[in-house]
Length: 342
View (cartoon, rainbow, N blue to C red):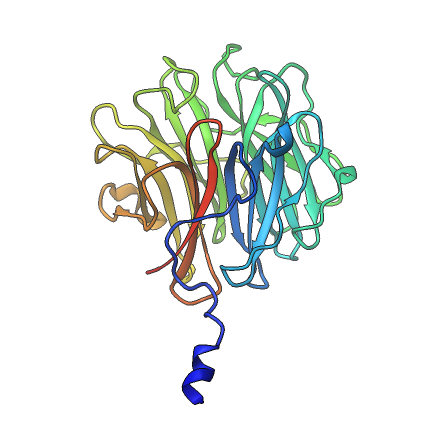
């Protein structure tokens, strides 16, 4: 009898898995996952899906790594909504930024909040960037200790050179304000001789760290360029940045893409990214504290090299993490996840 009772006990939460499809029920494109561990131990994943022939942001959550809430449709605009950046601040409020295309290469950054991470009102959406005829996209969001919202993003029609060059910009919303300040260039980051793309910002202790992709002007996007490098900078306030430092030192045409900063269960920070440094694309990571010692400290991440947009978050279980990424044929990409231990 005792053995039978043990056999009927539920599986433990966040047990390690092989890759599992997350974006179920969607036969079309699903991309751009953003993952966080909430303060109550729930994992939330936001992503874009064009199910129903309209690209929108969806969010799902799990408390055990097996059972997921139905994907909640967060946006309903006729424009295309892509590339969500999900964040929970020190008070428990959820923040979400994404970009909305209303025409080809015409887009803005949109922002919203939620008290529970699954209930979002489109009436509360705020357009964080408002200049006409610009192409704002790929936002990364954080919130300062005093509640200031910082959204770094890419734009190519605001360029410091007045051309189609991609540069990084900041949209800031101060505490108690309903609207965002006027957009400014990322202070100390952009250069006139290269594209900047795919920023990721995080509060890393008492300071801020931002990593991004820099590549030459021969191709507009980094995934088409035969070579791209990761750069990083630090800031005391999230506004003014140190001189950008190049992270990778690989010779030749090596592509480095989709950087993410994530906090480990012991409170340290790691850099995660996709690279062809070993030949075929693989996912790598390294401690943030050792960025200047590349390639010392670089290891393979516990995620498949297939696909792109890999992201990791800790789970509430000791030594256990969840990774999400995108893979699949063009036009029918899916979001997958895997739980692993280290």
